[in-house]
Every structure is written in C-alpha cells, then in structure tokens.
Length: 248
Length: 380
Image 1 (cartoon, chains in turn brown, green):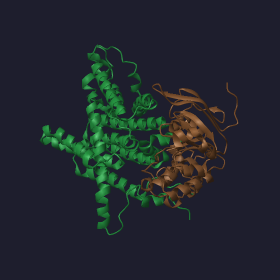
Image 2 (cartoon, chains in turn yellow, purple; image 1 turned 180 degrees about the vertical axis):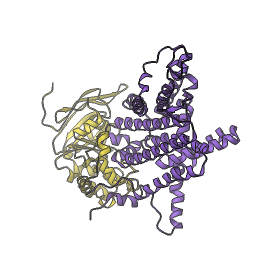
Image 3 (tube, one colour; image 1 turned 135 degrees about the vertical axis):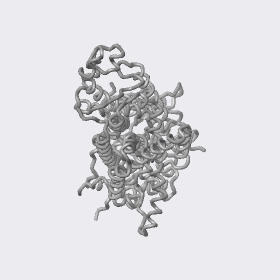
Image 4 (cartoon, one colour; image 1 turned 45 degrees about the horizontal axis):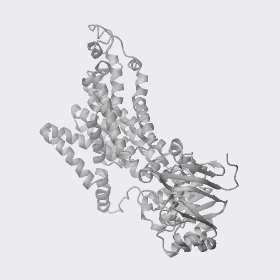
C-alpha cells in the first residue's frame, strides 16, 4: 500500500503497452492543488496517452493514478468524471447539432442518470450557471447559436466551458490553443489564469510562448518517460530537452 | 420561472393535422376494407416512431425491430387464441381446451408460458414488457461491451433470424410457420365484423397519437438532447459524466416497447400473427419506412409508414413483380438524394416556399438559431 498523499494527482509507475510497445513507461509525476502543469514533448512522446490513462479511456497495464487518494485506474470513465476529473479532447469535441446553451446544459452536472435526464428541468439555477460560464468563455452572445457555426477557436472555448460547468478539481486540456489565432491564444491564456481558482489544470501544448505564459511547472515527456521536470526556465536549459525537443 | 410546455405551437399544429388526417379524413373517405388496411399501416408507424428515437436520434440502427413487433403481436395473439380455445369450442380435439395447433402436434397440456395469457391484464402488461425485457438483455450485452454501429445492426438481424427459426421450429408451442390464426374474439367481443374493425382502427389511431406525443416529450427532455449528442460525440458524453450504455439501453427498450404496441394492434386488426413478421425482411422494411419518412422526424416517420405501404398495396395490386424493385429504388434514392426523407424535403424546400407564399416570414426549422432563441429565454 502506498501511503496517503497531499497531492491532488499522484501518478506512479504508470505503464501501458500496446502489443508490446510501451507508449507510457513507468511514468511518475505529481500535481499540486491549484497548479497549472504543462506536459510537453515531441510527437509520439505519449502525452495524449497519459491523459487517456488518467481519465480511463485507456486502461493502464501497470501503475497507479491517485486523485485525492482515490485510485482511478479501476474506475469507469463516467465515475472518474463524477469524481472531479474533466477532460478536453485535442480536436474540439462539441455537439455540433445543438446550441451553445444546450452544449453547456448537457455538461451541467445534474440529471446524469436516465431518469434524471428525462425529468431534468431547465431551472433558473441552470440558466444562471450556463450564462455565467458562457460569459467566462466569451460566448455569451452566442448562446442560441448552433455550435457548428462557431469558429474553431470558439469551439475550443466552448469545450473548455463544458468542462468548467462541471467544476472539476482537475481539468485536463489537450492542445487547447492549437489552430488558434494570436489574439485567441492570448484570450485563452487569460481564460486559463481566470479559471485556475480552486482547481488544477493539466495541459498538453506545443506552443512554447503559450506554455511560458501559463505554466507553473513543466513536465517533458520523451518516448513515454519523463526526461525533465520543473520550471520553464529550468527545462529550457536542460540539454536533454534541447536535444530531443526544443532544439529543432 | 416556469417550465415551458414541451410542445411548441408549430409542433401542436403538425400533430393536429396528423390527428385530423387519421381520425377524420381517412375514416370519412375510405371504405372499411381500405380503412382496415390503413390501420394495418399505422401499426408499422409505431415501429417507425421507435426507430426515430433509436436510429434517427441516438444513431443506433436496429435491423431487428420485427422481433419486438412480432413479440408484441404474439402476446396478443396468445391471449386471443386461448380465449377462443374453450373446452366447448374444442371438444372434438383429443385434448379439449388447448389451441388446435397444439392438439395436432400431440401436445396434451398447455405449456407453462402460455398459462398466464389466460389473463387479459397480464397480456396487457406482457405486450410491451416481454419485448422490452428482450431488448434490455440484448442492449445490456451489446452496449455495455461497446458494440455499436454496423456490428449491432448485424447482431439484431441475427436475433431476428434466430427467433423466426425458433418459432417455426417449435410448431407445437407457437403454431409454427402458419403462426396463430383465425383469431375471433377479444373478451367476448367479435373483432371480425366491420364495426369492430372501425372501433379497432380508432383505438389504434388514438394509441398512435398518444405515442407520438410521448415521443415529442422524450425528445424535448434533456435525455432527447443527450441521445443526439451521443450519436455525434459519444466520448464527449461519456466524459461529461454520463454512462452512455444506459442511455442506449433505454432508447433501445423504448423503441422495442413502441414496436410491441404496434404488433399487438396489428394482431387485433388483422386477426393473426405469423413468424414472417419477426423476420429479417419485415425488419428491414420497417427501417425503410422510417428512412423514407425521415428518421429525424416523428411525424415524418408516420407519413413514411402510410405512404410506403399505400404504394406497396397499390403497386402490388397492379404489378406485383415490380414492387420490390420500386422499394429498393426508393431506398437508394433516399440514401443518395434526400437523406432527411420526406420530412427533410419538407423542411428544406416546401416550408420556405410556403413561408414566401403566405408573405410572412418563413417558419424556422427546429434547431435553427431563431427558434432556439425563444427556447433559451434570455432573462429580461
């Protein structure tokens, strides 16, 4: 038995192998409460797989993921979400046939059983919360718009909003600014700084300027292993990191 | 704030038009023979309705809805058959008091699963619940293991084939390939004369309208939106804290229950039930009805059921050999040229044209920005 930990998220010895190929190999890292942690690394380093493992989309071959001392590796995906872990996908994953309002409403953490969903009422509380989140993600004027008509950047924000409305203690974002304009990137950084209150954020990102802007700490992955960890300045000087990732 | 009524004014209008058509226009303009045929078509509409929820909304294509239609029909047929098999009526049999086909098959005692069907109340519950229980088991086995899409469709076909073979093979218990035939009375009331057919037609139409309103209610709930969300982004729904499999099982059972009601009404109006209706071909026919009518429109599916079957009857009377080609052509045309079916054609072409014709602003299709504004209700 490993002991209790103070960390919000404790990943220890996490390994997953796909037909013998170890996409993530004996990985350990820890995320504090209220921390923005960024995972960087070259393509194929296993970054997205780490998020998949934490949120239960992929099952670990070995190792443990403890979220507030609860083991996640054996839990079902929806139970992990209900425990307080939210996940944004790499490509904006929103419901294009529904409106922005409905997208956020579905994500509102109530009425998640079949019966609950049938009898769910759009109460004032739901409406207020949806509007509050919509304001935060700059989409307040687009509540009635079908989500497919949003721009790429707005779709990314909407998905962040869909996490935000669940109020997760840990929010995992897979390349939140990919494909965004410079202005949108700035706004997104601002958004992340704002929503960090009372939660931790785990971000995968390639955009170094953006990483520098938001990261408290950076973890560098390479071939499924951690090769460096620490502040942005520290990892930027790390010769190994420069060799495999930042150098080119 | 008060909750809004789940039917918007235009929904109410469309339902009223449908009600007018099947409760007034058709009964007044058709003779009882034709009306009885329409009643039969409308029993398929129950299945199409279920497919709109299951396939159109949730994206779960079931090619085995005939299973549930047939099971519902068999439940009703078993009750009617037992009612007709009184010891007096069957006294020439070697074992009086059991259905005639059992007697021919040297069965001397009523099988256990037939016995509860002496009770009408039991039968009423069994009609939706037996098919739903089967759907639950299939759904549990498939959806919890994340079997979906084409695989699921093929498995439902396999179930349809298995059940047909089972029913045909167990002749002594099921009536075999002939099915359960020559059904005459319901609680002592003769279901064969014209006036009885008329009453049954209206009962059927009333039930269908009730089911239509129910389907609207389900689609207007958050569950309705989750079904659509699941169809497009299953993972996103799962990672928003929903157990996706439960929702799929629910909608599959719902579709099964609706199909079963249709099946029972079919038995009552036509006077028999046979394994043919459980099989693969009618199951695919039912999907075609739904596709032609519009799999995203509750009322479209009902119109699809009416029109396709009306066309089938008309064509088959005049040129029976061409009908299958026409049906195949129709399905290809729907898939290639109007995936939204008749309802989609209406929404995309007729509705804007009507709007222009009447001068006013065109009624907006559901889901478009304008209609949704009114649904969201900005605070004043």
